[in-house]
Length: 428
Ligand code: ATP
Ligand code: MG
Image (cartoon, rainbow, N blue to C red; front, side, top):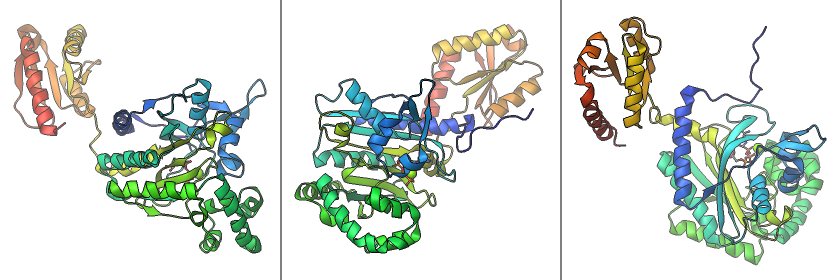
């Protein structure tokens, strides 16, 4: 029978790639704690209505990309295409929004039925943050500072640029909508099909269009940023001043509207030229109306999400940083019980030791071959002689240090020195 393949656009993450994922995940969770964020884990599946309400009709995600299905009860459910709607639902459902100032982060797979290509998958992973109940510009600025710090600490800051814009408040967008329609109406025949449809349903979304002809027309269109009311304008100015004060560079991009309807006021994207066409690594903004749309009391909110696959692609340039090969490979002669016993004793006392025990036995030659293949630095040999002497022979598999014979009783001292040298050598 023919072996089955994974679903198109949904990928396995193989052991060879896991070290990089875990390296990044560890850094992210540490960073979140440093800014006072707490993790939340929400279901992969929600009611479809949650996303249609939050993300909005006329968006790419709702119109074309949702994995929605009827379950056995006939309820319409959906694999989550993004995290914010579910986090808002959970915060409301569990009464987390009081007092103001809730800071949450999440990580995990998201699902969108898009055309798979480089940097675009149907199952992909996001890590995101959300802040609720605070409307001060300082909140926007601190979130951006968090991103900026992350790129610096990952060593990719020079490849990433910040674009920001303001989408104003609801009334501002309403006024702007009229101005945009007045401009685009007479040009409707020159628009791509999606955009022509969106003239009626959701004109702002026309800025999402990837059609070059449409984008060319938009160059001369009226700009939302010129239609901001006083509140939104003051907020935006304050955010940019805070960024200036922190030395965070940005470019104001009046065409940046973001692909989801719930945004208002500040929106931003971190982009790179190093990944080809899919260059947005992280994106977000304010969503002061979303909690109300989801049935809660009016509560400001702001957040962003980063695409883990794209981020890892950027970090990959710095190979070798995240590999986690075993420290040691324990091999020897029969009986295996001697090896297993020694290995367990070492694991009792050295929780950080990455130790692989040879479980197949056989000739030393075969065992050394497996030790090499494991990538371990050291081979620990427990042969007949060593068992008789209660010693272990230690062989350096990576360098040319002479083989050492260590009394089993002194193994702790020996490992202490090994880890001290290791830390000094690697500056960890
Ligand atoms: P795009 O314009 O690239 O479709 P988007 O506006 O749909 O992006 P968001 O919903 O803002 O993307 O998601 C935030 C981040 O998640 C993106 O910047 C990107 O890094 C990542 N992302 C989104 N969709 C995908 C996907 N299909 N495959 C891989 N990563 C994705
Ligand atoms: Mg998209």
